[in-house]
Length: 317
Image (cartoon, rainbow, N blue to C red; front, side, top):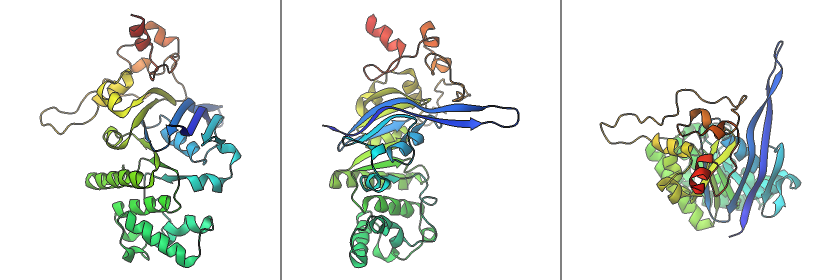
């Protein structure tokens, strides 16, 4: 399948800090990410907090311009398209459904706003389309004139999904879409997203730190660490045979309901790396129990779906 969305050596830097006695420093939030998203697939992007996932999502949505590199949407550079053209084809579902919804607007007005912005239909046809979208995501029409504070967390996220889908986009970027919800509601929303993908032929980019969520819905997974992709593979393969030590550590950290096993120790230590002062060579080497001497000097390229000198050593052997 051809790539519907392509990230080409994408980079995003931020200038942070500064003050009376301190110089401003550069934070490399995303450092040379290249990915392809095929039409109809679900790409899951996982990693610890602060690894650059949400920054990457905002660049995919056209909300943040890259410092270098390109986001290509179906052969067109996103930077050459106006905001409305991008929004018509790529829509977001954010983490917190309460803060992403206007508390002064009714459910009907929130879902119908994209239709009004893009000048689709008249008032009566917009209402019909909004009601159809509500019914499609499991919201009864009686909530049309309700406000977000009158809804449950799961209902608010359904409103956000309906708003994203009402103009029939090609791509939906889901940034932690279930992390603010109860576990039982998470399952309902994930099943809804999967059902909508099948019915409408949608393409998803799913940003998450929850590996169980990613395993449930993603067809392919990219693992990020300090602004870079360190491993990329089909979901089943990555969960069955992870190659990068960081991916193995993430999988080892997943909590299990089995009694007596206790809290897992992924072996990553108690401290997080400083993105303002990243290590030389492989950024993961200070936390890696399998680090080689060259890991401290040379940054491994992403070859064969993994960026790890250890894997290169295994191939050479």
